[in-house]
Length: 360
Ligand code: UD1
Ligand code: UDP
Image (cartoon, rainbow, N blue to C red; front, side, top):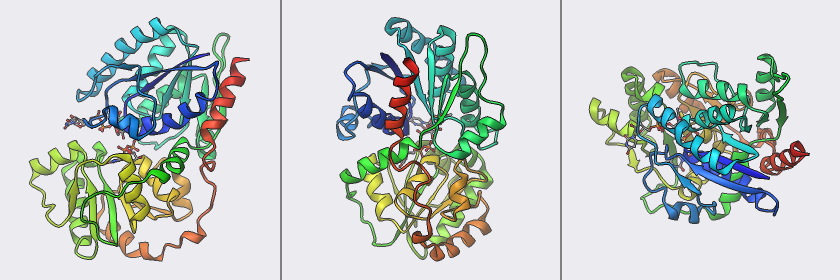
């Protein structure tokens, strides 16, 4: 069996690493990895793959830092060339990025079976490019691997699975591949060399809905500045956020702003922080895996079960809500958390078993 895996964003490499480690246990499965180049981080070089114990990509397309249309279009063209050459049995895509959508379109044009890992997630916010990417990808996928019951329910509510004469769809709840990664990399966590106090908040902000809205970005940073009078805030800064902060001359003097960090350092920062504040999808779950509360600077989340169990508080970019959530975070008790919301680290194993079953 030959699999073509399409990756672009850093979290996709982390998740795919777990699946690749499972695939490599089977001599009769060959995986070919395509890196679209979407990720902004220049230090995603050979060292990244060695450090992360991830198979190096077989193809690097070098498509990044462009408008979404240009990026997606160029990816479709290049991925199609690779797919024709490699002629795989399956194309695997992860999550909701432009690279995901590009891979999905290629597979449907070439009639190659499409596997969507992290299927069924919804924010119900159609202004998010990620929401559009994941809905379109789900629709043309043959195997929909859902991380949670909510994701399965979302698909059922949209009348999935769609089965026609020459198109078959199957839905499986397999757990969350990000948990597999978090459990694996915990053993390799690396303390960063920055001056880190014993109590600190780990914060990331990169979503366009926050960075590209002056009012929201200003509210978030005013709140962070206020909170930073009590506790250190460590903020690995995404390039787009950096650009906007500079353009708008927003004050960040009291925050510990650092370059985006490698994942092994990130795991250390999550494992040792007091709590997390973020608009990242992945980090919300990682906070839970490491039993840390999370304040999510968005109006909605795909990970609703974390809000329901009290591990996550949604504040949007509302100053009053952010400050209130910060004041309430001390009441969080990790012993009350449900243990197994995301499959307990078995997602990649489940996925590869189902793939093998699908081929028979
Ligand atoms: C993408 C994903 C997002 C994921 C994130 C994490 C989509 C629609 N979004 O968003 O879901 O969470 O990756 O990996 O696929 N830039 C610079 N300097 C650089 C390089 C890039 O300023 O050196 C800017 C680009 O102009 C762009 C942003 O950084 O504004 C990155 O672009 P993009 O590829 O859209 O990725 P993300 O917004 O990070
Ligand atoms: N991450 C990282 N270094 C950083 C910022 C994020 O290693 O400087 C990791 C983070 O821990 C998570 C993943 O990248 O595993 C999430 O990426 P991001 O927030 O960019 O994307 P999202 O999850 O929102 O798609």
